[in-house]
Length: 568
Image (cartoon, rainbow, N blue to C red):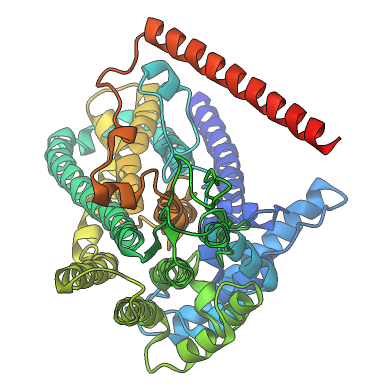
């Protein structure tokens, strides 16, 4: 009688626990990260942009979230959207091949065109024309242990806590089964801990090696992006140093000085700059039209226009390059995106027509921009707007070849990141180890509390390492795996390249020395002491300067008095 009551009580407890577990699993299933896309934000997160083209049903979901009248209505609305998304995913997968994935390189243009709304395109363009980044290329951290322990966003804890809770619930259910018949359960699992320990060794080695290979791919992609940015800077820096210049001489008349020296170089730079390149040269002009001590040289007008056009081509090339292999910027390559770039002044209508009609795949349009840059250099050099010999031409073209190799390597890394069999065996090993842990715990005499807690800890670390490796295999967040809280920030890379496209042109807008004096060998004016002037010497110089200025003011006042006397 007593045994039957205990058995009945255990069954009721197990039933209640099963209901609780089912409810928790349902809540975890509904509380996914896709719900953040329904929130009304002024800036669209890059991970949300990437998600737009992979699932057609996601297009209709990206809209300002409507505030429901009660939490129950919010719950039902979320469940309805989740069901619609799942049905769209199943229909998409059923129409495709068994091994094809809707990734950046294989996504149909119709899907991307459907997802490319004006709001999304304007957000992309606003971020793509910036010359200062909103945030760093990756999340920065303080190396102190206290600071790191307090972090949640961007850590494996925020990525794995759901699966950790699910596995702990699984271990909790195994605990109830174990309590029903401890002796039979323990006898049937005799020696199970030995098998689990052997599998643990294999899993640990395989997982750590897999993580190392994944990080190597992430580091390679980051290195290619930085080298691509550096070579683009090299092109603009080299052109700026070899651009034709107006050299000011002492024989210029006053009108020539006003045109060539004191004129503001107000060349509006298309695209990323909202101001103008103000290369004003403050020359001291004497009455006879000669210059004082400050004689600066500036670009010729045709050379400056060549530099501005090359800078704009550099920015457009960089933007189309990242749009070709990242999901966040892929909508810019659609017909609607190209037209919007014309409306926003990123490209001209003729450039859009050529890029749209060229016999190249959509994701290869940046190759056309690179050829435009090479041809512009050749034509400008032949026209005499760019100085330099054939060796300079060879160096410039070699930089262009390196640029082609860098962005080509990025696509190669993303397309051949990891064999399926490798990722599959690591996933199986990690899951088996976690599922087998509760049985190993009870076979070795652990308490139920340690069995549940150990399952959570192992899940947090082993599954966390595997999730981290998966994120390394997606450095540009094309798949939006997990929360996408710390991918390489494409907007930052583009903004830094935009700033570099005009940095060198602006930096050499004027030179601080006179080329005429350089030819004459009269450079003493620009020579300064090795360690500067001492404090005493600086004080003496200021006093002498004050005496000279006072003397000049007295002479000027005397001259004015004499002129007034003669006039009377």
